[in-house]
Amino acid sequence: MRFKKYQILLLLFISFHSYADFEEGVQCARLADWDCAKNEWLPLAEKGSARAQYYLATVYKEGYGDFFEAIRWHEKSAKQENANAQYALGLIYNEGSGVKKDSGKAQKWYLLSAAQGHGMAQFNLGYMYAYGNGIEQNYAEAIKWYKKAAGSGMTRAHFNLGNMYQAGRGIEQSYVEAAKWYQKGGDLGHAEAQYSLGTLYVKGLGVEKDAVRAFALIGGAAEEGVVTAQYSLGVMYKSGIGTPQNLTKAKYWFGKVCDAGVEKGCEAY
Image 1: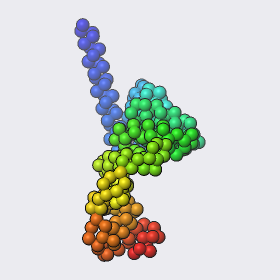
Image 2 (image 1 turned 180 degrees about the horizontal axis):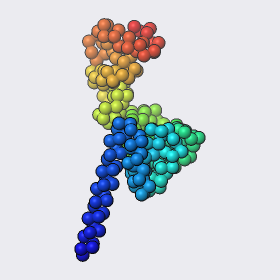
Image 3 (image 1 turned 90 degrees about the horizontal axis):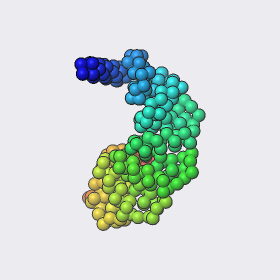
Image 4 (image 1 turned 45 degrees about the vertical axis):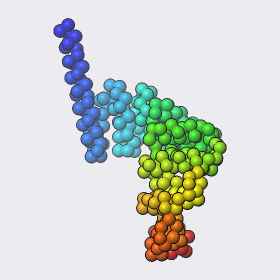
């Protein structure tokens, strides 16, 4: 019994020091002291810590630009089902960062990560399927993974789903469903979703026509820097749609669009 208690205390001691070493590495990485982070994480990674292996890989990638070592450590972590490492490998192969671009490998690692609920992996899979990005285009799979990503809190997935329903890409066209997904994305702060929902309110597509509501949504997106929203806001001020006519404010927003390099903003200004 005494020996067993000793073993437990020893394990707790080791765990505490491993945690302390790991957190020390985190502090070093925050200061971009890559040598320090490596010194803290390498012993833990060599002992088989999937978490340390993943973070060590980021040191090699972000700190040293050594993609060979980054991939090696990411793979060790990924084989232990670390979803972040699996996603990182998918991203490396998808972008061809330091390696030859390989959409097949990207898809493989994204799938493994996405199956564990990794939101970005789910979103990137949806994007690959939606646009045939290195794999066969498949709208049904795109919608499936976008919905999973939306469930994981990826706001752009809500926006992309709204686009697919609005255009009827791979699914029955529905302004009602488009508005629903834009609303969800907008509620989570996605400015482009707010703008798209605003355009539906302007025309009364899938929602009851409401120029005042449209003005509020489009105005919010414009303030967030969405150039198309800024132009539309200029039009609304110029024509008095959802707000009293104000040519000074219309000119201001057209000027913002012109400054962004969009010719029609310059013409309207």
